Image (cartoon, rainbow, N blue to C red):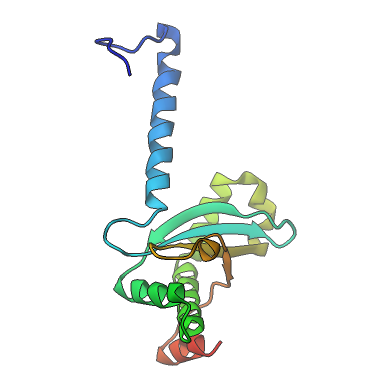
Length: 162
């Protein structure tokens, strides 16, 4: 805690760097907040990418689910007899979302991780489910998905019985 008024106690030559560091800290905090489920109860899907040669997962973003994904996540977290079907439907939904923006996602990943530039065509994607009530062992697993196009209602049935 600082009781000083006015500017921070940083030498004038280092103030630009100090501001950039403060902005980076704010962005990192915002990214961490976005990767955890909020008070609305919707799940958050944290996306990861890796190459087929090197099996190191790199974080590449996250997105929030809706009511349907919340119901599927609840079923999956309770580990009932329909949890496998719920998991397959979650995988299918994420695969369809990835497929729709795959080229843009790959460009963003390559900008963030230049070491993956040579493996543009050999990228594997996965997600980690973050949901309140999800057991800790399931919350640590990164589920690999293949980006595929969901063409119609029959694809939804195919995802159920995968």
